[in-house]
Image (tube, one colour):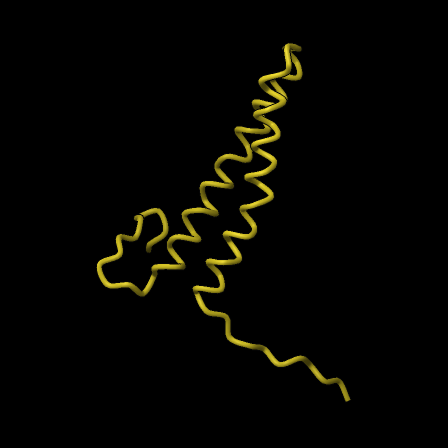
Amino acid sequence: MLVLPAIFPVTLLQISQEYRQSAQPLRARLKLLRQELAKTEDPEQLWHIKRRIAELTPMLTQMNELAELTEHYYEKGYYRSEKYTL
């Protein structure tokens, strides 16, 4: 007989913590890319680094916004961005 693991409910606070943890590698990568950008003079490398920064920055922003939203979702008076509401 197949036994499936029990599914435990996940709270919004736990989701918030997951978003914050997931943002850490992105934050570190962006820091490294900015350091490379400061050292690089090759126009082609500059273009690639800037492009990568432009791709990763919105991802980090969204993770931070969602972490904030899920952390404070049930607080009275907490402003929820229209971006994440129906």
